[in-house]
Amino acid sequence: MSDQNVATASVKTRNDDAAGALPFGDAQDFEDAGRGLVGVLEPGVVKNASGDVVWDSDGYAFLDDECPDTVHPSLWRQSKLCAMQGLYEVTDGIYQVRGLDLSNMTLVEGDTGVIVIDPLISEETAAAGLALYREHRGDRGVTGVIFSHCHIDHFGGVKGVTTQEDVDAGRCPILAPAGFVEHAVSENVYAGTAMGRRAAYMYGAALPRGPLGAVGAGLGPTTSTGTPTLINPTVDIDHTGQTEVVDGVRIEFQLTPGTEAPSEMNFYFPDRRALCMAENATHTLHNLLTLRGALVRDPHVWSKYLTESINRYAGRSDVLFASHHWPTWGTDRLTEFLSVQRDLYGYLHDQTLRAINQGATGIEIAEGIALPPAVEKSWHTHGYYGSVSHNVKAIYQRYMGWFDGNPATLWQHTPAESAKRHVDFMGGAPAVLEKARKSFDEGDFRWVAQVLNYVIFADPDNAEARMLQADTLEQLGFGSENGTWRNFFLMGAYELRNGPVGTPTATASPDIAGALSVEQLFDAIALRIDGPKAWSADITIDWRVEDADVVHRSHLRNGLLVHFDLDGQVSVPDAAFTLSNRDLHRVLLGGADLSQLISDGSVKADGDVAKLGELVGYLDAPDPDFAIVTP
Image (tube, rainbow, N blue to C red; front, top):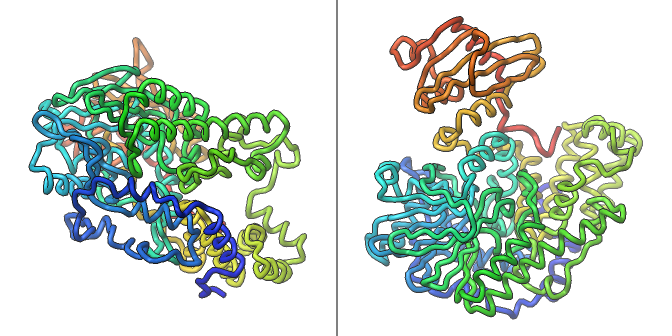
């Protein structure tokens, strides 16, 4: 059964039923996605300086075929749309590069050059997108960059379109919403290792591209694997209605914090009647809590900001575009699009809260909730990236936390210990496997996955259970309309069969780690202290950071690293170091040789220098290869 790799009859039937029930005759999205094509990247492959492929849009050519039994027909349709690649004209003077990364890069022509909005994930894909634009529109310089929000697919490629020197010289301002740097670096550093490991599942990093593997992530094909970079913004957008002129282009901004990202903004081009919705209104139900992990987003304020967008901008717009997917043209159509998106998030929020106050738990609400027919009928409300199921659970988590209120679930055993007891109660692993095979044959894959998980966590070396679980997760993937659910299921099957693949991509690049403030840097270090090992330690170190004009004290006691800026008279530290912000990062994060930095004069040290070595000795290393489908 481990080499099955075909859809079972039950999955095929469900996919066939979906194909018959959904409005596949509606071709409007394909018309919109193909409108304004100027040219494509040929071949659709981007490589890094070492010749390694970091993006391959040609690998999705299989989507030109008919939908196979092993892919939900709605997801196949969405993946075809997301895989459309090239440079597209949105309206006069506004172009988009689509299909060269998970996100879009938008280019707005100004008086002397071009403004780049959201330069993708990687330096290499952003450079390829800019080259494609210049091939067709001339060698215009980049005269401004806008980061719509703090997720890496909207800023990581910035050094592919501009340089630190041009930004420092004022030739290329970078505009971003207030709080951008704080949220951009904290998300990628604080829990970056765990998020990166789970992101490998979310985007199907190890899966082959094709009908049996990865077909897309719903929001875009997948993530590029090039070099993520960061240049700090030079202009903060701190209030709605703020208007800036960049290279002769007037732009009015709408701040939307707490929606799809903690720091995000929409913006309007009044002279071109064009509205950019960042990632707040795309052609999918988005995530309120991503499967890779994140802070829970607020659908209530999300809905309210969409109402504000409608009231402020929709009636004055001829085209709406976003940082993913394809534009919508026409004032009436884009107004309806925004209205349905608004209704989608608002309805999920309000109905989940209504059910919470009637005593329902997150899982119960997720199983019972249904969208209004007028919302459900729109393709762009389908859960290709987020889902009704996991978004409702996220809303429950936001308001109620992890505990469902039942005292029986207040103090449960760990997954491994609980699994051993479940398997014992069910008559042992052979009995569970026999019953699981019967349920598999009946197409009850959700149940099979649950009970086999007990066997694997009770006995990780049970090869029979692992292979049957791989087959089960594979069938769940074949039947999933959601791109990230499919990838999670198929990645689970892949690792059960082939072993862990680890974390193929790194979000905490040198640029991102280097952007940590002094406060954030010590926060990141504090998260790595091995508390029990450091229970008896008592170490005080002062850090005089010259270019930050600050003296920061770190004090390790009771297994906790407390840190703060010094203000007034305090006790004498065990050691003190005077150094640059760059050397502070190198010493604490980069493993720099402190003695060498002291000897060459880069760092001045006073007191017991060995105390720093003792502090570093209490740091634990994160594990980018931790197990997911096994204990």
